Length: 349
Image 1 (spheres, rainbow, N blue to C red):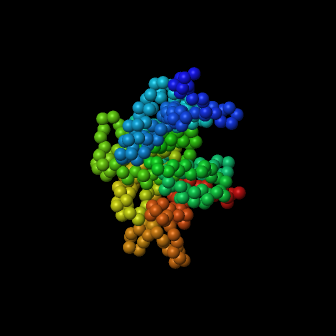
Image 2: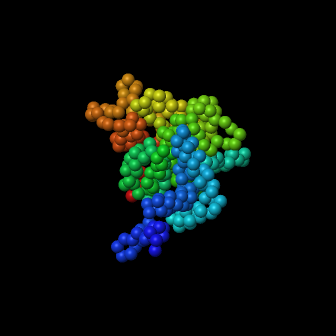
Image 3: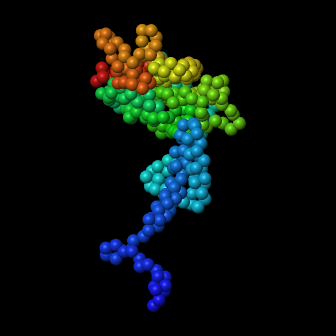
């Protein structure tokens, strides 16, 4: 055989121990990229929802621009079906849905109906007829809610579930978590008589979702923003009260950031005026001066009755420490006892 012919022969494939054939690095990269592409299409609905619920800004815009087409192709080619099947098996079929509907109760009927307004005497509850309490809201409600649960833990006339607190949620962004739908479902299914809510800690911005078609909403605090936020607050209050619950809405506290406090004041003013329209059914609990210093400004430490300084606010200048939660819980109990009698059963027993 001539030397030139020998040089044209294909090189013998490289093998590892045991005769296993070795592939080039380029082949491995192609396989990895193909696997990544398949994974992206299979998980496109979840990626698109994650992009949708991001805070407003250029990062959200870029994420939507990338995940939107992926989601469309995934659904068109039915590549989203395996993920749907897995979610259904786990009981989480709604995980990838972006629900922005602001559920509003039906208008009041013109014929007289029985009103759940506060009776002249508090309604009595016993271990046989328990008072169901539901505590829910954004992250600010968690500490005072847990304090309230501890305060009623030994009372057999009270039934309360763990605090339903959802971090980074609120009334402004139902695409992050739709409280309007959730509150309606809880009220209709569980029928709690006492409801404690706290929202607004994440609502002091101008970016809203779930705006009715044809309506425009301006920047935070503008007349159109106030009108839409008022509509949402009223919707929540009516959903609770028309399902037989008495609502105590905890107002937003003073914060370390004076600009944020001013924004919270805008929200509090809406909460207060809407609660006043529903006297006897909704109670607004003002927490502003619970955590103000002698000068009326923000104070992280407050003196207790013995004169000892107690840390009330978390280091972020917004959230509560446990003593603050206990203080709010004591005020909540006072308001609840104005409406419901869940302690006199002990005297009779």
